[in-house]
Length: 220
View 1 (spheres, one colour):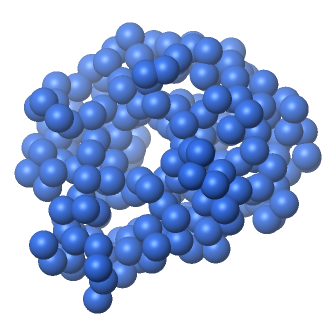
View 2 (cartoon, helix red, strand yellow):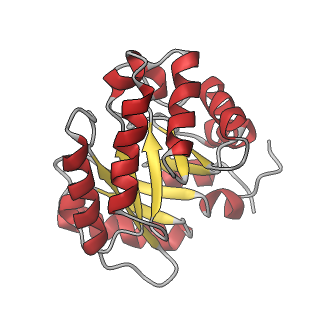
């Protein structure tokens, strides 16, 4: 089906559990499964931090999740606390209204506030909720993220009614950032075919909850 191997795809997966009712035991199971599958990281809610992980497995969390509709200083404080609690990577949700209203200077400022709160080497991913935006807004949001110092742009929370990742959005985002930033596809990717399509469109990281199912569809 694909030239992409199971091992290659596994190592770009953020194995994700962001259900609000997730328990500590379920997070522990997530970590064990991520280690078994050789995923890149686990992504959990900030209330679950700190999380013990084996060497080589990274810890990601979310900020302003899932709506993005909180003040920049709150997102910055949340990010700073997440880092102090051991997060290696922070996935922040933008204020979607700023993008829909073409207020991209304010969007850049918001992202910059979070970047300042979690400086490099912490990896900052910016969730633009691409399914809720038109193409022009997707491009402009990606440019704002790059200007603010983000490391990745990310399609979706997986919680928005507009939908999750699409090949079209990933292609547009990858073309916009031109390899200078990573592109994370997340939301609704539930099988190997979808995962490979996202990678071939330009995704360099995948946010998956169905990681085992996706990987079972690939060969070594």
